[in-house]
Length: 256
Image (cartoon, rainbow, N blue to C red; front, side, top):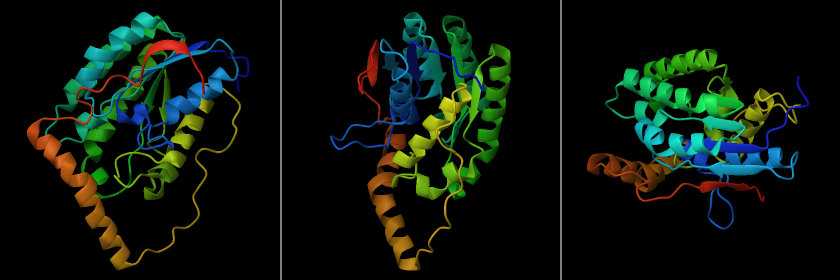
């Protein structure tokens, strides 16, 4: 385990996962694994700077077009690139094209930083996840290839049973809750070579059985509050990130 690593700057790019949904703070903003990681890195370097260009709902083409250029220009020591799942979870998707675009992003970013981090990002276990499994595994296989090609760090959170457990996910069933984001931050921290602070992949206690009525009530609430609006956006070509600026558009000193 390396212990003398220092990163003085960090840029995160991606979609809602990197933006931090649904690790909600009391003021209604989102924190997330990238913010948590930045806070821990900043504790090691008083001059540490952080930018998070992620925007919810972005597809990999939008990430490449809108985020990779600014990120590369910042010349940060550490860059995390996570994207593509929004694409492969759509009914129609050219996975080969998604991989091609992700490769373009990595090609652009790798020469500009000391360490590029890619991720086999997590998914909530369940029927929807299983339906898209072949696409997801094709994408993640390519991410492994990218990691080897660019000497990038690949963090495998996808393989984690605990992080895939529904208890780690918010009510919308699309985004991690606070505990899920905390575990991802620890996983990246360890992958960067820092001493573990905990076992991010520790098993969860046995789940308490939920009655039929409670399950159905939860399903109805999910369909009304989350699934319906999501389908509406897909049918009309809209995105939850339309018109939304990056989370932290400039590489500035981190203040937790």
